Image (cartoon, rainbow, N blue to C red; front, top):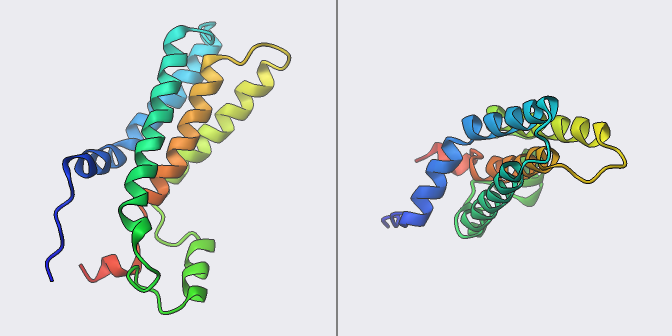
Length: 150
């Protein structure tokens, strides 16, 4: 049986997921620097946070209609226990994207505590939206046991 070729949307989202380490790291760094330089409430940062949120939605949709639609057996597991163990021990995770997610979480916590009692800044929203997008990119770029055979 031949596998179907991904659509243009699927190829674009997978390309974007492959480049997410650079995109995510630059967004979180920009968020930290802008807060330090006094541009934390810039409209550009609010727009960037919105774009990063939309990117995470693209990752969710691609996951749902890609590997998320495959069964446990199709992913290469013999039982639910094996799949749960694989997921809990973070096997098959792209650790570079995991590092971006951790960087985004730490940056959003730092920026959140720096601005206690003030209106939420665009820099904090950008760091948190990047964290959310990175968590979705982790699922999208995960290596499954069935992928080893292809």
